[in-house]
Amino acid sequence: MEIELERTFLLKKIPKNLKKCKSFEILDIYLPAKVNHPILRIRKSDNKYTITKKERISLNDCSEQTEKTIPLSEKEYQELSKIKGKRLRKIRYYYPFENKRAEIDFYLDELEGLITVDFEFKNKEEKDSFIMPEFCLADITQEKGTAGGILAGKDYAYLKPVLDKYDYKKIKII
Image 1 (tube, rainbow, N blue to C red):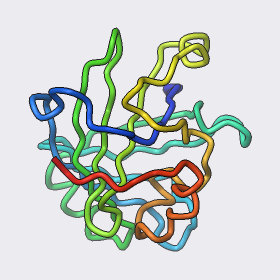
Image 2: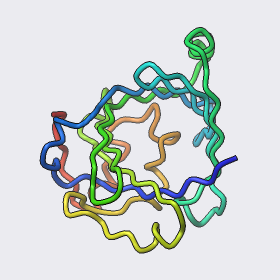
Image 3: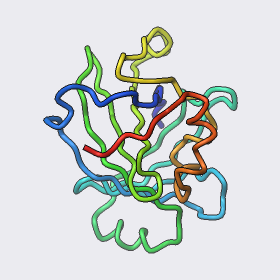
Image 4: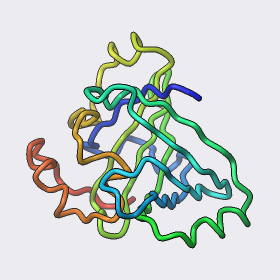
């Protein structure tokens, strides 16, 4: 089992040359559907298929989670994707920033207009000392309603109270 150290930010403005970066659509299915915050995820990302279980290590810190990912064949994914779950679609861009890679997610469907930026870190010191890039608006790592499993199946109006705290403005898909 791997430990994931990650921080999540709201995007303030689209970074320069983002259109030139590698991008692909992601479809996440969170299970079970009737749980408020499912931690089991089936993912189709480009032509890769996985099942992942992510759990917070501490109830007070969303930036540190255990993560176990298992690759799936396309046939396994097709069968598992028939299970009723909460769905979430987004377009992810990999954007180089200093010595890191930003994962910039443009949410689709009912969450269109929401764009988040994730950074992963090698250790706690790197995570804790990271300075938010100027193209980001706010650190939302600890905002309970912004995790993928909670967002799945929701709409933009659900998030509006959280986004309004940061004066977030919808950004169009590029």
